Amino acid sequence: MTHSWYSLADHFCARRSSRGHVENTYFERCVIRRYNYAHTADTKSIRLIFLREAGNDPNNKTLIRNGRFIWCKNLSYEGLNSAGLREVSFTIGKGKKRFTIAENLVLCLPSNTYVNNNSFLRDYDKIFPSFSSVFYYEKAQRLMAKSSPLTSLEGLARRIEEDCPYRPGVLVKPRMGYFMPNREKLSDQMDTLASEFCAQHFCRDKFPDLKNALAAPNAARIATQAITPLLDRFFLWYNTLSTSEHPYGIILGKSRETSGYTGRELYRVNFGGTIYEQVHPIQMEITNEI
Image (cartoon, rainbow, N blue to C red; front, top):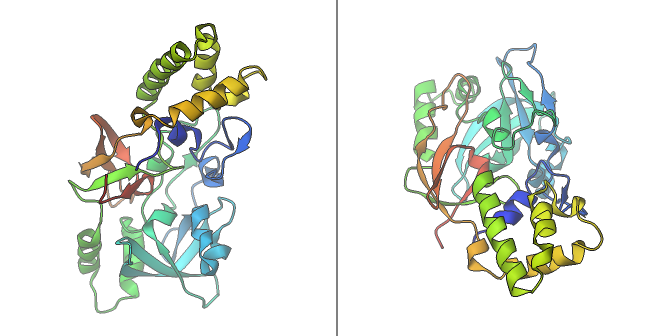
């Protein structure tokens, strides 16, 4: 089962709260931070940013730095884990402890990359495409190749590509907290369902208020005390509808923005007839069931 259109938008990780009054457990500091260019070239270490979910593994709790990046060195490609995702291992600073992380829990920030997530300029569709992949960034690959003396840089790059789980034709679903549905499609669906709800519940006079609340960045934030119960009733009804579920997607191929220089790994994905041109790997989950 996939997630609903509205829950995906409402729990997007750039939002501190969901429906205005409930803490959003998917909130990520990294998507509201500004990252400057680095003065140090990526010759010995790479800037990596770890998602909150990485801290679920006790061995990786120290990697969670409230959205701040960590300079990681001694990178080594570890192949696929039991979930079929690529993994990389590394050390930090002068420490000898080796950390291992899967590709769905890490973002790469090349030294020549500047990311501005200022609230006035923030575009939810552009947040993740601004970040790179540690597996496709050429300088990161060079560091991995150094730790594998029996493997050439070309051979390592080829293996990483062969291990890539995101292939054309693969079935995926949007990942809760990291995928923002198409705004126009979402707005059309919520307008239609709000109208249907008001008709079924004999409250057509409340339709303008309900529509405005649903259209807000956080629904209940602009809702008065009188409209909040109506919102709660709407969502109870909404979540029982099969039409509320966001469709699964099919990977069509890599985005044209993919390159070794920037290290960006982006995909074109068809979600129920709507094609998203720049989907970052952490924004989707591979699935074998519908």
